[in-house]
Image (tube, rainbow, N blue to C red; front, side, top):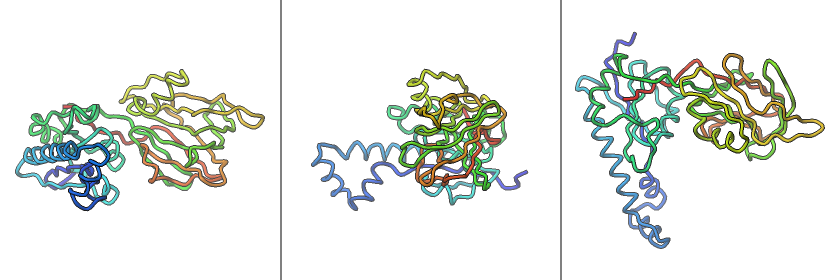
Length: 297
């Protein structure tokens, strides 16, 4: 049991305005760059102010006897989350996915600073409710969902967690060669890669695959199962297409690389944060033991 007082950890990412300033050094140069291309810096600056106003209001709502910390997306892999933390994500839905893999059951509250820009599927706590939801979250009595996550575990022991999906394939998205196996069937394949998605992820990348292939696999965010989809499997004398899609509730999916180089595994679309998956390496993919503890508000 945690002995420290609760800590509210606010998670943000750089705004488009901040990234533009980092690239062009001054607001004037950034403004000139955009204006010569028929664009307006004022919109980006307004979005920047809007996010920081939401962040300020959120930090003001934290109980006086709590501790506070702030971390940006770029520093998540170096930040040490504690068991007494309550996570407040200020930004778009994808930022919740970015932070989820670094947590172990801590409650997550999402604040949407721009409802006209972000859907708010995961960042859906009204700012007016934050003051009451923070202590309720720390006490474990706030309304919440336990969203299933995906785990990829290599034969070397390395692992990746994802809230949305894990991709296994070639880094250039050209043909990937591998052997794929479920407890019932195994075959060699050549495809554009394999996606293993959670119930949260089936509304994203996996949804486009289902629409293109008509392989519909209903999956709710809290269902203790994940689904796999093979992208464009190619039939040949050496490769098959029988294993195209399926649910994984208990036994994981196994994939063994047949790529001499360029094989990768990455999570939630973050291609730069990958595990190498070259010839002979094996990975098992299924539902993770960890879940995202998402406060619904």
